[in-house]
Length: 170
Image (tube, rainbow, N blue to C red; front, side, top):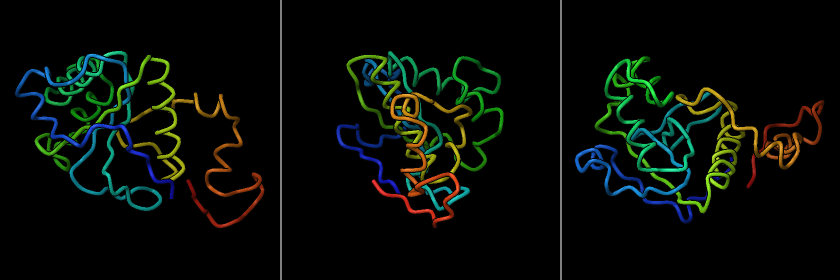
């Protein structure tokens, strides 16, 4: 299992807290963000104890998280695919909006935010062999930068034909 390094990330905060204040407490800076449930989620492989629902990146954290919230609370709102999927798929039934939490990490540039999102998605994929439930596409940046055999290295397989037991390490 690859442990996610939460160093220099904000603390988990209830999404509704920010909504009450018009999201003004969120930074208007580039960064990566995570929206999560308040409980663990069973995945294809193992359990995601952080309850991650989506991992994203942006050039403006405040604006992007606000758009996520707008889409998540009103069925049919567009502008953030994960928020739209949350509403459309009725995630509210299993992960009530009032319990959603977020955390983020500020980066210097949008490119750095994109790279961080790619590393986070790759770690999640290596741990659970699937993307977070509200992510619908993979950020290929990490594999393009570090080579496509990086995934095999992350899961402890020396070659595609290796039938070794899945072994994740950081």
